Image (cartoon, rainbow, N blue to C red; front, side, top):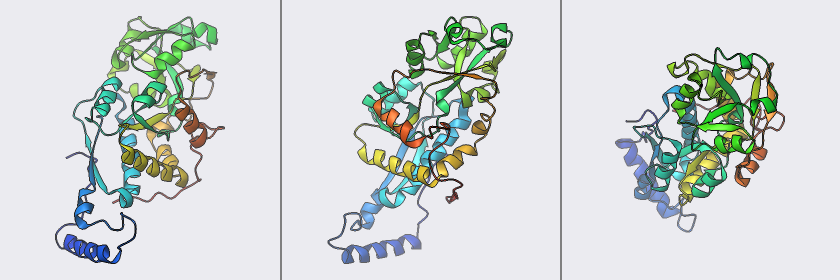
Length: 324
């Protein structure tokens, strides 16, 4: 059973009482909404088993946060849409495969950085789920590389070779901003820098410090002088035809943003707290995101603070209601 599996607690006598109540209500509520007229049988059928991607070992802390947010959004909408359980797929897959799995019905919910192509192939839930963190990129470089011992100009950075994943939106973004990009799978990118095939590996602000704890980044360090920035929201995605699930997740996320709970949960994560000193003494270079869809641009403007793009524009100091 998945760690995130949630099931109804009503069994035995409790279920019999519930069935009796439903029978009374179904007789009394003729003529009202279909939801109010639901029978015990249809209520029991209103249970969803949703398949989601497995974690990546180097950033599993971020994965657990994202699954926690998805779980909370689904919990908040159970009265309208029914109960649910999340089943984590056994093997981690690259983003291209995750999108194909979604299209073929082999996955129900995935999460990716938004771009125009993905927003056409799948249905994006246009609420950023990790603030603006993915828009800030630090550089993972060799510990012995003295070129990064001082602040470089943007034109100097463009003379270096960067590495990124073949199917990442960041690859197109950096190329369109005149950076030379060497394409490598995720883990191979670290080896490319270590072995001199690339000069730097741009990593999301909150990912890099987690990755430094893993052997894959041995002999590497986080450059202390530069930050690249471009709007780059992370969204949940569902199959284009799954309107009900899309509306359910969006409704739950909006509740979390408006109450301030989403910001509070994000702020409590260790990876978020580690970013607080990231802007000190770093030169921030703002780049154009040429693959940002209209949906993503509107979501960034709607949900993130313009003056503090790591934060949500929700209520301050919310009270988080713990689920059972």
